[in-house]
Length: 225
Image (cartoon, rainbow, N blue to C red; front, side):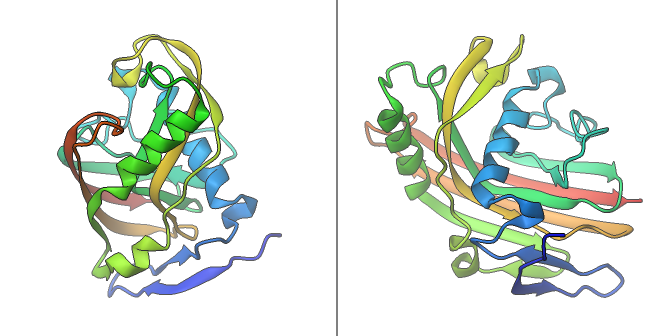
């Protein structure tokens, strides 16, 4: 059994179960944060746009690709920008993977990138320009200083876009890299949880993924049974 290496950031909420975050640099459920991030993006990019939790307005697609698997984590989604409020029912016993400020780039999204170094530059520059970082679980708010420790930049990994893919690309395989701020919790017990996370970025230089001002504001109401 892999020991739970937990940070000192502990949530205690009246009337709710407590939730701990795995510490930066630890191996939640036997995998490094980098490995979890790669798996998250493989999941996101493999789902058709009309079923993708990324574009889900209500939470109706939150279980897509997550039922009947042996994964120890349950992925929450980001959004294309703006505010999303989602309700999701899920089984107890899984940890949450929360993309507080997620970013990936691949050759399909960045056709001018000639090699992996180009992709890495774009991914890093994007997240270097993050302004707001905000995470609240129940009544516990995590500081920017605490969240800064959860930034990860991955090595390259293979992804396969389906037909009707997300992000307006063509279907098929490609290489990707990821950057951003992600946290993973201990397993959820039966109960109700409210998760709120926000991020903003402003990137207007030539080496950005695109000249962009972006803000995400995502709220999940989780009913864990």
